[in-house]
Amino acid sequence: MTTIAILGGGASGMTAAIAARESLDNRVLLLERQSRVGRKLLATGNGRCNLTNLNAAPRNYHGGDPSFAVPALTRFGAEDTLQWFRDLGLVTRAEPSGRVYPLSDTAGSVADVLRLAANARGAETVCGFEAAIARKNGGKFIVGSVQGEVIEADRLIVACGGPAGGRVGGTKSGCELMKAFGHTVTALRPALVQLKTDNTWTRPMKGVRTQAKLTLEHGGAALAEAAGEVQFTDYGVTGPGVFDLSRAASFAEAGSVVVLRLLPSMSKVDIINYITNKQMSFPYNKAENILSGALHNSIARTALRRAGISPEDRLWALSEEAVERLSQLLCRFELPLVGTLGFDDAQVTAGGAETGGFDPETMESRLVPGLFACGEVLDIDGDCGGFNLQWAWSSGRLAGLAAAGLI
Image (cartoon, rainbow, N blue to C red; front, side):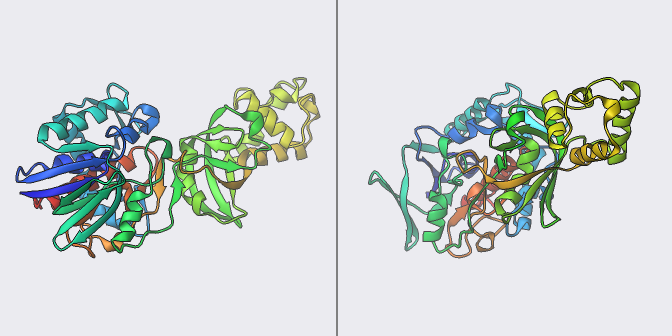
């Protein structure tokens, strides 16, 4: 009987374990350093678990070679994943955006069906096993824990994830093991994370949410663009739209700036017309009310102050220059980028083991036969919206089947 050891009981690791046990000729050991499997999964989607996206496509993935993800995503895409989860007993619902959640709206439902399926298939789960070393001796992999336990396996799947989400189990251990096996690991950076900016103008709007178009720029050139909800904080900005910029922001040079278009459906001419119509219709209203009906009052007041307009001024008294300044500001509300929050706050790690060292058709190492990797430990990460978990399911299943000799 072939023994397959899997390091990491998260999304990709549990998927690999279930897949590997599709052949009963294999003994599968799922080794998890925490006291329970799936702990990091429980925190995804603010505890709701956005488990995939119906629109998942290669364009949603990043890394040194994003095309590496194509075979796994093609073999086991979003529809395949949903059917697989249905077979495991999970009931889901899809939102118009394509995001898919468990019907229960709790990540625990996803973790439970995976854990129960792994157990039912006969995978042996060992919690509290934190790998300290892993090496290959002849035809066997030797894995030793920090507690001194030693496990032998014929094949090894590294599914340890990355350092993102450190409070719920994120770790660099998988990348360190990859290095020990001779694989190159790229720089690791937080992704799907909040942005720190100059907070002069965000702090007064703390807690306020709005829809906006976002552009990350450096030297006048656009580095990345996104659209969606933005929430202002005392350190900068957060929200789904911000998360989509955060990968590029992690790699951005000093002097970069986040530009918000605060009325995304309106051109500058539209905004000027909106303001001048207000002036004509309500000439004696105060300027503090000029954007009522268009923006949250806190955003409106902040924009007025930044444009140098007193909220006490009467609308009829606003000059063309003041209207121009305000309109321009609403089109380009610039926030100098300071950086991102750290790995503890990040949902995903950008970077990992270079994919050139692995076969995309099997997830097997090109350097060490019998060694496989899947999920976040590899240099593949996705956009916000369920794409990263889809990569976990797709790559985990492929690694599990390949390690089991089923493909």
